[in-house]
Length: 338
Image 1 (cartoon, rainbow, N blue to C red):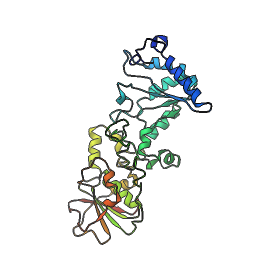
Image 2 (image 1 turned 45 degrees about the horizontal axis):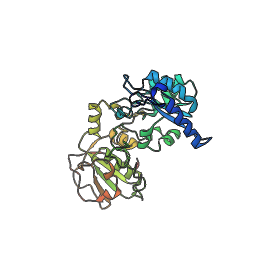
Image 3 (image 1 turned 90 degrees about the vertical axis):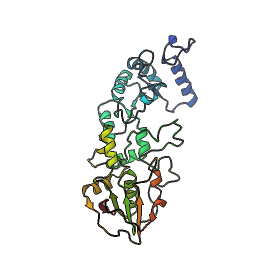
Image 4 (image 1 turned 120 degrees about the horizontal axis):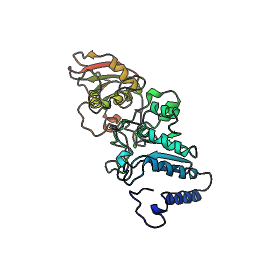
């Protein structure tokens, strides 16, 4: 369908119509799967190469022609020469395809449902687009890699608990030699569900846990321990948790990740939505003297070099220690539950 890639001069070439091969392929798939099966098409409606590739106007005509053969159509942008434009990182605003999807949906005119794709990670934006008639359905792949329970949480009224995708594209890129296992920087269990529990197993109700370092890894470890019943105390040198993430968000114009839709701070820090909002509200200077008793654990997340959060999530890293956190650290109020 695209002049960028179709250079054929036979019956499947563009001179015989841009949809000839696509129609034949869809019809053959229909015959192979039999009646009652769903057949859809993912169509690039803007290859960002107007000199030869598909343009929105050309794609609208193609979509209208193919729609009667389909059960659904997914609208994307980019081509094999611009794959980063299909799933860009946080430097591109989420929902960048919604205007294009609206135009294609108008051209299809109800012949089949039209789905939107394009950095859709904010459920509020998706709800707005649905109400505005931009699309009939929405592709939220990376959002559900970050939180596989996104739909369940949304349906049960637990919107504030959704672990957000930050569009970093570091661990979830498919066909990337760096990612033999598709995982997620904000959800360490993704891709490791069979070897790493999402929650700390067993009870920690009689434990006191001191976490040194209020970054994403430290706060996530604190959340897990608190959910297991431990009395958790977080220590941080800076005046607020997640100072590096705040700096990154400001420098990269991604400050939207520092505010959740519900007003709780720093959902970005690996889903510590309740715990973070509690500990940030009150700061206290650390007392002098020994802090750790016989049933206390010390977990340092402040000076460990790591490429992901996964290494600090393993419960075996919670090792007994009688060392006290440095007096220069700030203490955040303890909590027994996340």
